[in-house]
Length: 404
Image (cartoon, rainbow, N blue to C red; front, side, top):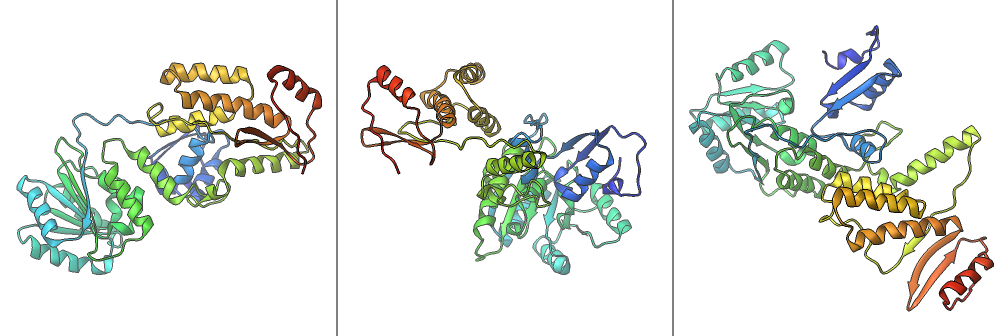
């Protein structure tokens, strides 16, 4: 058991078979690449309440396996969460309420240069409170002493930086106050909230921002997410919202967030695969995809598949359908897992078969204009006249050809 130090180049393992990484969101890409170098066939299990966007997106698209634990521990209550402007009266009331029931408080203030002034200010607000200060620039021995004293109940308030976001498990601390919460990341906010509510008491979390401060759009989305997702085990939903806000990062590079989706993740992976196959001399270009724009409702409603991860999984399976047999098998699976297929879902599965068939014969798009069904072929593709005649005999539609 160790810290990042275990990943140093001067440490050589004799026969490493399993590596378990806790708090995955605190590891950088360089650390993870080092894990791969240590042994090619090492099994790796990563644990986190809030996976970073890059890791989550890789799991959602099938690059990594993922298991979600949504069952909370017994006798736990959701943390009552408030997002509000900083107000001395509110903070004073929150601290006094916690002290009245014999509890302790975390006050997160992430500015070391003025943390002493904040301690004096809190002392003026609540004169009877005992306050300890802890931050990462203190010596190791002094910081350890502060933490042990707080655990032993020698103080009522721990005024600290974000160093408490992981590893702190004190059942008696059930009020969290975060100053300048708009400056912190969504995963940090969620991890900090997880420091309270670790007993059978109702806990409170106050995420504050300065009065009259204009909070930017991204920070506002983060604060809204932490306020919306308060139920126990909501880390996966928080991570999904973080993925939406920050983007998925770079699959090949070191960026663990960023909008790779602006060019399309599936297209990115397809181009990557084509480049690899071309270098190997095995490249066979696939026919271009077919755009289907018909006046039909074709999607997976939230009422049918409410879980986001399962919905993404089913969209991937539907997109991979290549023939009627696969579509029928998929429909049976969905019926077994989620119940009878609503009309929108049945339409989506049927359209996936049509898209695969039309793609194979070079159709660029299928759409409707007024009362006509318009089928456009890719440039350079000549429709098979025999198949068109067969279509005429079966359906007897009026067919008109246009070129250019």
